[in-house]
Length: 519
Image (cartoon, rainbow, N blue to C red; front, side, top):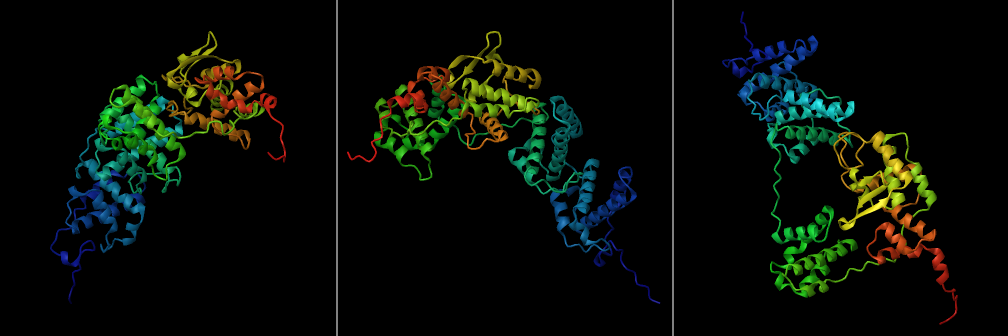
């Protein structure tokens, strides 16, 4: 009788003399997980680990060399591993068990991991405490902590050091197709908000680590050094023109487009070169962009002339960009509509109380969105019921604080505004209670209030209240000089646009219609 000796199921026929894989690591993994799940779960974990060890042995890959690329190669291999089914490789659950086994080996030291941050678990616990102390809601606390934990696992799998995390790495993390060995609530991210939530939590954790010095702060390397003359132009705009930071940013961005086309020697500038900067622009440039080019170029030439670097008469060579200021009517709404928009703010909710205070300041004082955005606690004089406003060109003005607007601001400060060390009056309602990023968010508050009121066909920007206040004043009998004083206009020509809405005055000067009479 002939007896045929078959090779073990875990070995190929050609590996008769090769040593069997060391399954001791899978046994240790199984023992470590006895308290973590049911016997069925532990059995599946052990099977996945043994399958992975067999594949490593056949590929002659040492355990110490395992990384994310090796695991990914294992997931894509054409499985002919004896009793192990190839269908398991196609499931995220099976590969999750393999990755948990790899993490277990990394924690044991069998797979070396170069890391530049100690006690990640300790930082995660401190991060959770910080989220609670700042005032995040319980849902946000859990979400941010979960994404921080997720980031730690993903960085380890990707072999990315903590000190190398930047915006590009965070983008990769936010958009990666997750196969990380971590229990997630959902298998797929929400289509519209999932990536943003993932990145938001990871960014918050990285900022937390940088603040406490666990990882070095990012040094922002500029792609190119700013040209010295543009740097001097920046200082001139700030010191001599009183321009705001946003205006300086826009001017410098525009000037950087054509500064090299003017030439390196301002003394050699001529009228033809100056005119070509404005006239020879692409067809996609809008009319407003053309006006901005002319305005910035004119300001830049004035700066060079003040420095003695170019001829002063070159300022007149800049072609005018016509802006027909009086060609349209100011966009305004009636006082009744203003009151309906104010009434759309719920006085019982934190958001409604804040929004009502913002809109009343815009409507009663005709403030710009930037005025409300920059308003600080020290600008309110409660004893004298006045408000100090930093307007354009850093010009400060003191305005009377109306009763209803003052009451609304006081209610917001007393009942809604969080107790944080911020100088700005209006902050975000949700943690971390930071000031608004720009004045555009003030206009956003107005747009949402208009939408809640259900009013159709009205402007949705914050400037609508400024136009409406001026129009109401004129129709109540005020003259243009008084309107200009309230709106803080430097030139009467700026206020002249409102003369077209003074119907009573226009009726006194209107000429009778001649009809079809020939000239």
